[in-house]
Every structure is written in structure tokens, then in C-alpha cells.
Image (cartoon, rainbow, N blue to C red; front, side, top):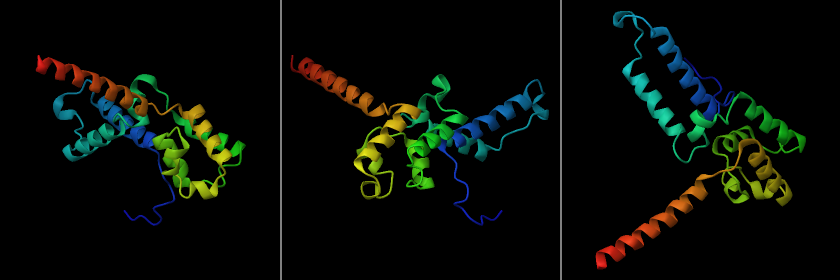
Length: 169
């Protein structure tokens, strides 16, 4: 297989997650009720690769980490994000890769979006930057890992202090 133009079609993390989950479900459905010798076997390297990718996509820092429970990402979400950006004419200034990164990473502040969108400070006014953050929060939800990490760090400090006092006594 030859790749003639690698930038023609980009897929989001959600689309990769969905495709791998669907392929696994097809294998399970195909193998239901069949004897072992009639079952389709997933090659070991493919199974390992699928497992690694799914594990990566549902890590704590990923927006997909709660996809199985909450189902907040679906096929319409990316279209909704693009239409909201088009309503305020921001889609023209965003590159395809930047929009995809916003969707994949779901940052909730202009400071963190600055690392995702190339030359954000020069290409967008402060008002436009804030509008992008509002649209991301409205369509994709808030980026919660930072808050959870702060809470865990505070709890860890409290636990460390308690342990330290126990060792002194």
C-alpha cells in the first residue's frame, strides 16, 4: 500500500478509538457460539497493538478516559464543534491539524490552547481566543484532569504530613 498524500485524511482519537472498538466487537460477534477451531483468531501482534492503543486513548489525561461510562463523545460532536467555530468565523483561521488537536486534547484555557494552535497569539485576538475556549467548553466539556491532579496533590500532602507525624511519635 502506498500513501500518496498523508495529510488528506486525518482522524481524531475518538475515531481511532471507535474503529478499534468496533473491530473487536465484530470479532466477538463473529465468534459467538462457534467451536474453537471455527473461530476467527486475532493475530497476536494486532491484538497487542489494539490493546496498547486503547490503553493510551483512555489514560487519565485523555478526554476519552470516561467514554465507556459517559459516552460524551459521539459522531456528531466534531461536526458540532466545527459548526460553532464557523458561526463566529474562526474556522477560516484554524488549520485542520489545530482543530483536530483541540478536539483530541480538549483544553480549557487560552494558555494551554496556545501550545496546540500554531501562532495563536498573533493569529487571533484575545476576544477570539476566549471565544474558542468557550466553544470548546460548551461542546466538549471542561478539561478536568488539572483539577483532579491538584486535589490528589493536596490529599497526598495531607497524607504525607500525617505519616510524618506518626513516624516522629
